[in-house]
Length: 151
Picture: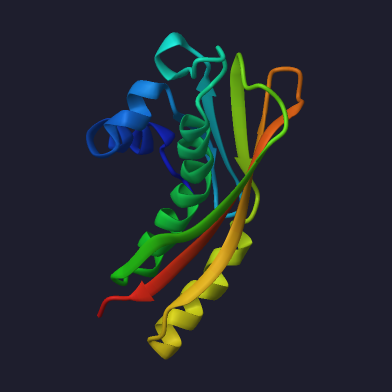
């Protein structure tokens, strides 16, 4: 599947401007994996001179949500998506370039197939891990996505 990361990033500029201004950029996406980067800057820092937790959360969520959006679009159906819950762990100060990777795209299709077949909402958890330039984990996010057919 050919997908333009540039189109996702343009979408961010127009529909999620706070994420775009914070520097969140989609670098890679396919059905199974997405990679999002964000660089620590004055604009997105906390008083402790590291990246604000919410900026990390936006980048982590984007790594999961971009795949959900993509796979919903591939169904050709009108399906809503929403984060119902999330959990996060912060293990190191986030400075420099942080790369969030989610490799849980395989979980999406099953939930979409079930919601289309039954008309009932489905939930599934996806994990996004952020590492710094030294490949040290700085934060791990878990998002519970809900999907439901709109038709």
